Image (tube, rainbow, N blue to C red; front, side, top):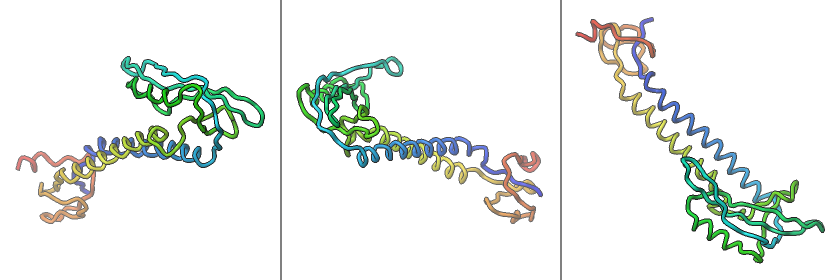
Length: 201
């Protein structure tokens, strides 16, 4: 069967963007579900802040990133614990992390969530707030953007690519089985080339 040229060659960028976007959305969903499970199943305990400070590390391209680190002391089942916890995200803004560290000043008391399977695994800022859901929100936004770009590219390039009958060189529409001009049987193909003689005409 004779075939006609399609826009398959330009599908690759759109397909890549769409796949990456869907992967990011899946990862965002996993992280978001994990955070919801923490809020739903991890109990709370009242803890006293022993120390709080802003720590830093060198991120990508040498940029200095900051996190708030807080040491809590609390008692569970008659056993005392001293556990450190860090903010749920890092930033290049020292003042932003300093404000978090100041909110957990030494001597203040806060309710923190702890993992019942490991009491030293705690979350100091667990709740329905931006910081606690920062990672899934960021990944979800990136995933939605990549998916949208991929779909737009696929639709735009697919509709923009002209299709020609290899028999007579006439324009045909995607999905047509026969050329309306010469009745040549048509089939989508990515590697078909229009005969040079037809293009010249």
